[in-house]
Length: 92
Image (cartoon, rainbow, N blue to C red; front, side, top):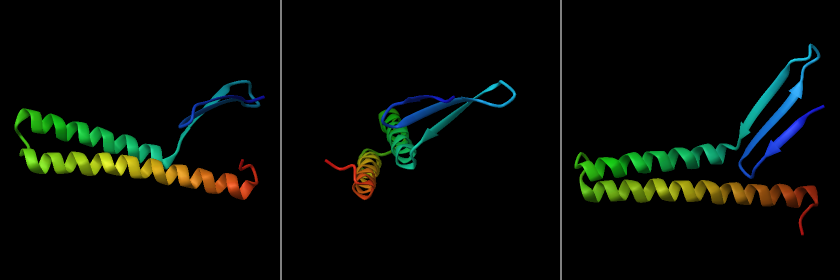
């Protein structure tokens, strides 16, 4: 018997193996990994700008680009999920 815990982005699945031990599987969508990476890099660039290691204008441009990348990846994910629901016939 499998026990599932899920949020919108992260899914944990626990199941028992035939030998009685439990196995936990962790899955996350590719778009979420990209979004998290973009936010982390944007924060690192922000720290560099604050510390004066990265010039202000290129730093702000990089922060805007990585933040936009994060938003774009989430939009792609939403469109993919909507298309999957439409194909499965579960749309409202």
